[in-house]
Image (tube, rainbow, N blue to C red; front, side):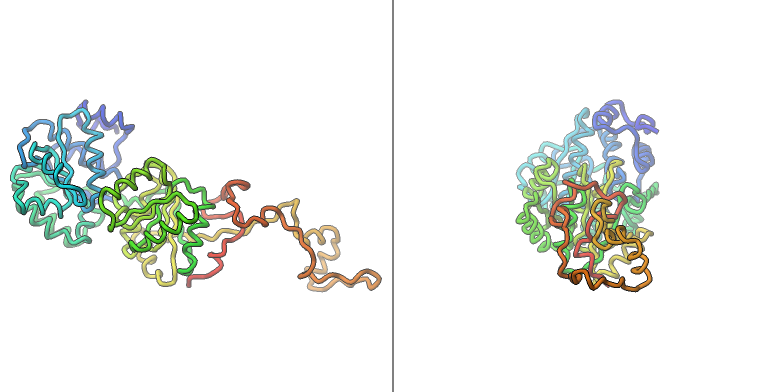
Length: 459
């Protein structure tokens, strides 16, 4: 199936082709025709499944004909975070390049002036977070009675952030004849009740969870004590062929501390968390996307919806408290057919949290347990070299006996004081393996010395 089979206009197909896409994802193939037929829709899907384009593309064609009016947006897309809202706006700019549509982004953390100016000129698409939209509505700066189409994105995240009362208030102010689409990774009772109240005979679409079915992501859990986490993170960043990585933590204070520590260690690292204003967040994301920094320390504000190409690794520095957050974090890598690796640091206190993650994803996350290297043939250990030179000694060693010594020969030097040949490789324990060794041959297998942080069991 191609995008041309879904009923999209030629102008839109040209924009899709220019963006480099040829085949729709499963949710796009099911959702786009339904939206074009003006049906209400419930989409149960994770980020990373092409969900955003499944409503952006048909909306562009639906809204092509119509008249804009000041302060009365023709369509409304509600997003739980500023980052998601900004990403949806980027999608409209990319796919709507051949259409005469006006869009406004209404989010907190930025000046209202430009937003109000855009609303006064009239917009076809308003992308907003509930807080800023409620603020302007209560000030009388925006009217919702001309809205023909509503999208509630990441509804379960809206629930987690306490936005459901705002959503209900906004829905009550919209025309009852509108078309409504609701997308959610899960369908808890509160979201089901919301859908039953505000959607009319919706078509329901459900696609597989990205993290439980994406074979492109190699996932591992790493058992350790809390004090070993920083050492472990440094080791992986130096030794696992990391190109770009997002390091997730549960707390904003941990994000700041990690960014500071990694910078001192010489890594090119940025940070993004809820205490930063919107302009600072956007600036950090742009540095990450452009490659000026290749490691991003982040709280869960960055976990959902961010589509950054080429993220090779995700590190859960903290095991997420909510299993859904694991799915969204891990989904930042292995996108668009690329390979990715995800490591979750697990302490004894995280036993219940990681069990909940495995229950949600339906599979046990393999334990990362690198193996010690086999000696090189040209660098045999003293014992094995002696066994090669003296086969009888080898047999005696196997039987547990000791070889009798010749009293005429010099007394044997105790093993602990005997001089040992140390290879150049072992003399440089901190040397990056990429300089002198091939990468691990199997996923999760390290072909070098076992790092110290793995010597301690977390259980």
